[in-house]
Image (cartoon, helix red, strand yellow):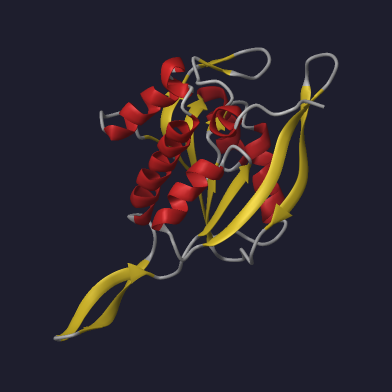
Length: 216
């Protein structure tokens, strides 16, 4: 399932507009905050879909029956670009456990690239809801590889993916590999360049959030 949070106007579409805007992108703190805000909205929407139970809560004047989550999800993100959205998810699922995976494009001389995974730190995920944040879904290759990597650690009960911008090609690729996943997008673009960049997209989310990196 794919859910485009910009299908109807809301503050999300305003924040996506700022993420795309070259004039606003010069403010790294605002760029990070907008990613965080989208993560927060996605967390709220996802929470409506998660299993809950009734719990008796003691108040100073009696007891109240409240609906609460049956279990907290595991929040996973792809370093480094995903940290802003991850923080937004963590603001809402503040008792959730966390997983961090290093994944990047390793470019070759002919212009092609392969996905390199070099690091993962994650809790027990067997039978748990997992929410993965990655600002950009372009080809979908890195995301699919990360999910496969996570599944080597245990069977995921339910998978949600949160991104700021996705390309239709990447979404199709991810859902072919993970047909039961639910993908929450800030917005969706249709064009992907030969080098695997989303158009109009917004540029390199990691660089815009945390500054340019050295290339080896």
